[in-house]
Amino acid sequence: MDQKQIAMVVDILWKDEDAVQQLGALRSLVLPDAWIGAGFVRNRVWDTLIGRNTRTAQDDVDVVYYDDADPDGDRETEIEARLATLVPGVIWQARNQRRMHRWRGKADQPYRDSEDSLRYWLETPTAVAARLTSDQRIELLAPYGLDDLLNLTCRPTPAGLRRPDDYRQRLASKGWRERWPEARFLEP
View (spheres, rainbow, N blue to C red):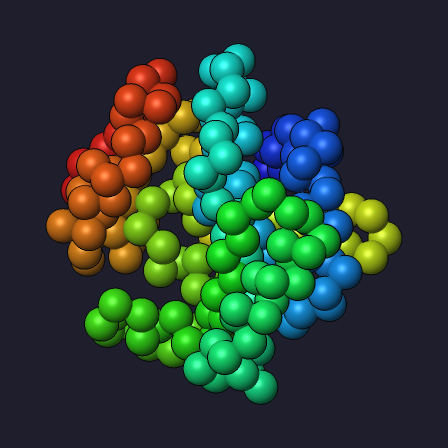
């Protein structure tokens, strides 16, 4: 990833008190390979780029982590509850990526770690995650880079190309075209 692009995204996150608080809450749980991704990063970056806040209380915070010790994700509800205690008023969704290759009948190979799981997400600007390190730095995961995120472009990942109906369905159900009319949405 380009260092200038990384710095731009990290700066956007640092300037958002809610984002820093949520990243800190996740870090305090000391989960293995834990990140906050999807709309958490995309929404903040796109809102900053268009100069308008489109976030609502209905936006969830997607926590991804990779825990071999909990292959069926039995602790996910407990993790969400702990995060809700630390930062109330947020819709937390914690998912152990160790099990997500089986979600909704996917035919994916088991994921190796959180970064590998992001490769199977359907859109490039959504396949970005962040975490706060113990030395107070924000790190990013972006297996497809940051170009599309920073250029307001939504395109299918290789997984989105393999599952074009799912990709189109997500675009339609999420209302992103209406939320960000400035963005380009590419069809498979």
